[in-house]
Image (cartoon, rainbow, N blue to C red; front, side):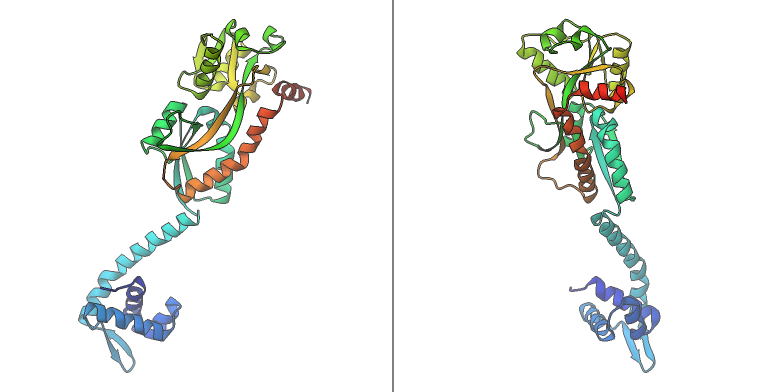
Length: 313
């Protein structure tokens, strides 16, 4: 049965207005085209739906019943199609996202603000989690997009790099560790303030310490960078944090030193392998790409000079 939405809309409009000319004007079609569409519908159904009268048309009994049934259905279909068009045009949509804390508090707010400015109807639902949990949520379809470090076993996931940052040793001004190279051997002798064990930063540090034949031991651990920064400010130890965390701004008086050799972390956008991103998710990733280069520049810059510049200004 060859029945199109156009023919259904044409018939309902004609049945409502009892006129081909009025229906054609409302639908922005020519009257001959509308006539052809209604005739095709009648042929496909094997029913006469309209009686052509000298002063217009009148729905037959079957036509009245069909028009009455079709009107609410066509309204629902039109609404669904409008929503789909809005999603495709990024006028509407929802993206579910999981992100590691350093990104959730740093890069992400700027990207979401830009997204909402350009596409006010798009929505982002954020779940903040450590790296391993982000990977699990993407694999389990709990979120469409994850932002974390690259998974070790990523055969079922696709990863796109968005920025790189470095690990910094954060300590009070005048701390002995701030003089000379900050090696893992020197760090091992200090009380360390570390991220939780399932974080990308902890995995990176554990590997670096293991390469030096050392065990990574924490005096305190926390999920949020602000907690570790305030512990360092209180003199409880040396915090090891990624340079991209926005919370470093709360303590410009603290010394920040890169490790020697430099320890760099790559942050990626993660999705299920072979899955296309929704238009809403694509718009979010575009916004992330816009702001990410600013974070990548921290790898090439000297954080100690930047901190000194901040204090002078």
